[in-house]
Length: 181
Length: 145
Image: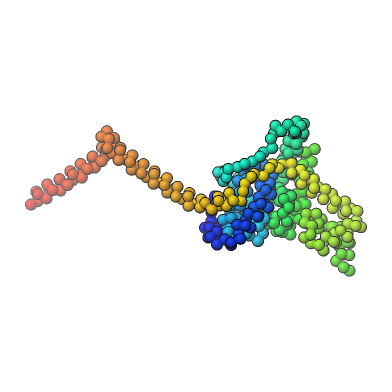
């Protein structure tokens, strides 16, 4: 993925407290961004790559945008769109250490696992039935994004976020009602 | 008539209900107006409550999709971000192009050195043709003088 020369120039003029602010933001937001992308794509590896790329770009930008979460959401959505378009996956940036849930965890009863898997499938299918915009809106909302941040991340008018979110909620309920019940 | 009284006349709109549920604190005046209306309108009260329940329920359903976040550190990302990836990419492309050109030159020289190769014959013909033409010019020159 390209690094814009504008960003390189900005990176040379990082304010002295930028790295501290970046680390703090990373601690607060990385898990949330990863969760959003993982829920959206259903692919934890892709979500991790994209979330890392967003933070790499933020660091290379050299300063924090005014609406940081909106900016990160917009960049993540653009990266995901590019990834879908090219159907390419970038190499892992870092060695991963993921403590995935052990499917053979003896503390979870077999029938509970089956029920949990069925629920996940139903939720995933309900999300798939939504339009791309509704899906993203709903997931951003449930990551605690404000109207303004959702509008920025999805490139829409802030005043229409509430009504569209209400429709997305209704659409999800209907879709889950079809698959989940 | 105050704004709150005017709001009490009609039921709450989708946008108003959404703002109260999805963006609490965004518009305190609107929130107060909606809550005042809901206190005297059972239909809107039920609608608002249903919206809150749906929001909570969707949140719980979505959380069933979650996996633990990867153990990436900010320091590791900053190290990655400092690597000038584009420069590395350009440099490696230049090296690859130079290697391809060098290989083609060596291959052409090797092919020209093999007597049975068409390239060798072409080179020999070209050189002998040049010699023949030079000799013809020389002999024409001597005949004139």
